[in-house]
Image 1 (spheres, rainbow, N blue to C red):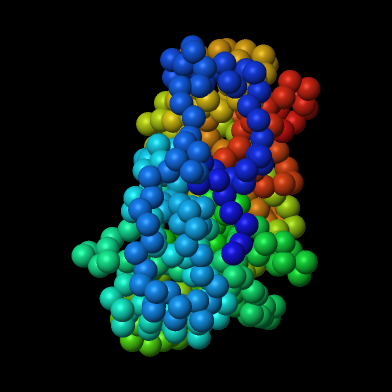
Image 2: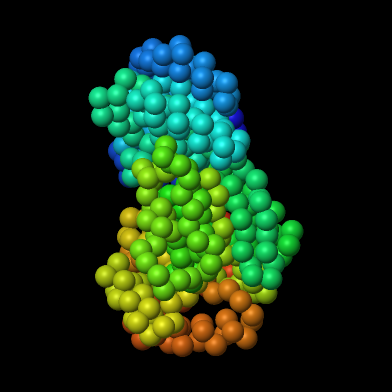
Length: 405
């Protein structure tokens, strides 16, 4: 099995940043938590979990194909995804619908054998990638079946090939996005797909859910970058054409991308990749309201000037971002002088050759100013992460480059 998260939250045990005193105070005030922590997650031994219902004969058959676990930790970790409602249920220990066993194949052949065995026994199977689903994709649907197996694809995590001439990479489904980007980076290539679940998202999971990311306005959602894929169903293998495009239809590729594992288990994906950009420019703007910000973004898109990264925060998310960053005094003075009482933060990013960025950015800036938006600074170089796009870049001591650095 691959590295795993805590069952009741996000990330590995003991990992991740801690909140500053200011951020903690902001959250307590906003949520009315003057008394501090309201509740803590239950311990693993206190989780409500029914005994495994897998028959001994099927258990032995599955175990002969791939490693199998049916301990509480393995089952609970694959009970749900990471939506707010999922985490509330997990923290309360409500895991009675957890899978009865977890199997971890290493090849398409093992996937096929496992599906065949479960199909013959009438046992449900749920594919599992990084476990970051927020749309109920991991919710068990037994439909009267006695048992359910989680098919953990984390051991199928190889890069099968990179075609630097055609700019494609063929990948196994369990490969996590950070590991993929590191490997491609050694060739000065990148996928450039950065959903908020980036740290844990798997290639197969992104394709199965038609994932979007912070650069989707420029690079497209993950399905726009799928060249071909292969999947295994109980009835056999499904293969989409390996050509980049076709006028024939219907398209199996379009059918399988976004299928959430309902039609088969994705075992191989070929994705478009691209060279690492020569330059990046990320900058912050403020709109007076969410509606004005949305209108500005619509104008950019309709003019063909949408940046590669375009993110608009509503008023509440903006206040939280600024509070977590420790809003610089100069930013508050700047916005007050421009008549802001609140407002919405917008983050835009352009990537490519410096001269191409300048050609695209200049008319976009004119449209934003005409829409009443206020420029508050820029950051060149490293891409902003989706979950912390403002925090560490708001500082008082970098006024030569604006407020956001």
